[in-house]
Image (cartoon, rainbow, N blue to C red; front, side, top):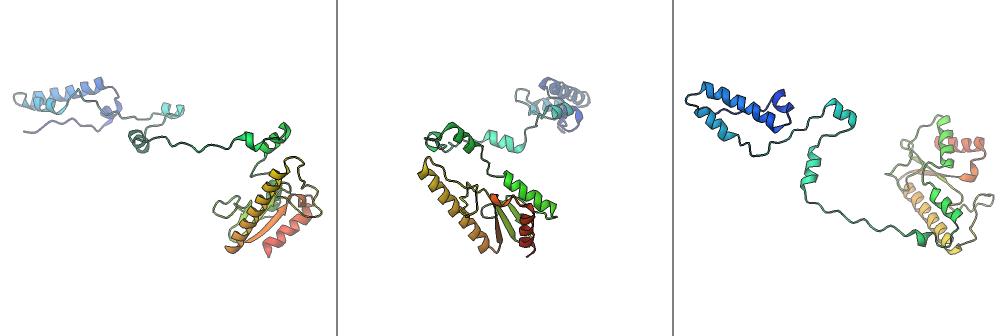
Length: 236
């Protein structure tokens, strides 16, 4: 005897989200089977197949209104994450600002907090100058040691733009680099670590076959001289 199985494909079945509406559709299908089969055995078989007490799987279909509101349909990854028993990993404790800024005035603390590690003003000056000279480049490549400020992949040349204060420029004619008068031990240790890190990055790049140019903040005043230096470095 052929069993009557309701079809779950089509706009009617997929479009309805209420269990009551789905039950009504199943009842109509069972009624048709009861009218066509002998003795109603097919209808009883169909009733045995469908158990209305079991939860019907909910199919979330995004409409254009959901997309406008930013509602996202739950995907496979979301369901897997929801079903898995995962415990929250504790984050490592952040360094206390009390120790970092101990003995520092409020004005100095604001300056240290506002200092950016990338896209600084000296760096943007060099990048605009290079772009005006017709060179194209990539910035802050994470696959290179030290993430150079400007990198030229085909040429295998990298440029670092260093601030004279933070990288402790020790040139005789530099008027920007200075030494703080408070917390001298802290600042001297920080400057030594910065210079050692810069030397390691340059050495690693040179070992990989790259040529490195360091542009200091005090050299940005003369655009013509800086442009000539950059052009000679890139065309060499």
